[in-house]
Amino acid sequence: MALSPFWLTVITSLIAFFITSLGGAVVFLFKNLNKVFMQIILSFSAGIMIAASFFSLILVAIEHSKEYGQNPAMITTLGIFFGVLFIIFMGMAIEKWLVKNKKFSNLTNQNVKAIISMVAISLHNIPEGLCMGVAFAGASLLGGHEAIVGAVMLTIGIGIQNFPEGASVSMPLYNSGFSKTKSFMFAMFSGIVEPIFAVVGYFFTNIISSILPFLLTFAAGTMIAVSCIELLPESLENNKNIATLGLGLGFCVMMLLDLLL
Image (cartoon, rainbow, N blue to C red; front, side, top):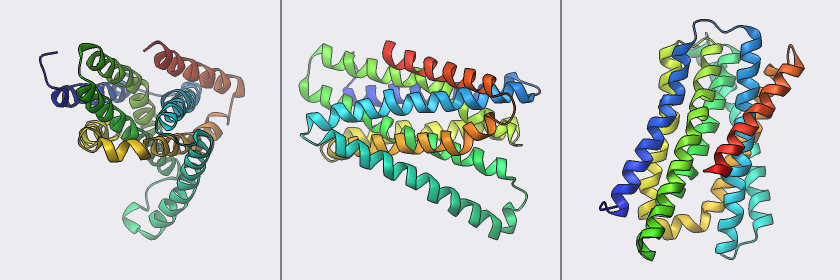
């Protein structure tokens, strides 16, 4: 606690990034992925993303919007809606661009889906990083031991939930044909935005705070859309009971991490 709030922002957000990378490294533990196992992984990832969109993003956005005198119903509705639209149009644009660009002609449809999923999780990490920075900036203004501890606990909670999110980036990428190293690197890059935007949130708290509820729900919309468009359809191709079990398990794991931490 002898460290300044700024350095606590930097250090704890880097720890959160490290945990994301650790989750992505799970891909090195597996030699081969059979269809049943990938069904569980994909549906588990969808459950994680849906739960994170609600407990990590939407609920937090509602609380922030109330604090700033905004209409939570309007903010959450617009944010989620535009987040869903963004993923739909981004997916169409990426597919169109890849078809035209001969350099990426060897990428399969499964590759594209995994990349879109990675982009959605990266987007979701941006407002989480901003939350960290805003929390520490607010703690520095309030002063006192309790305010700093509260900001640290928020960051630890975000960091721990990053572990399954890192795995939910690397595993689908590996399943779609990327090497283990590339899958891990993409998972790592999806988390690097958190410490970057934590610093941005710290220095631009007054500006960021007012638009943070929209950013949070926008990220939630992107994650819900990716779960519905990319992860769930593929996981339901074979045994629907296994896919449903994976979805429920992923949702419960992320929900417990958010509620307990």
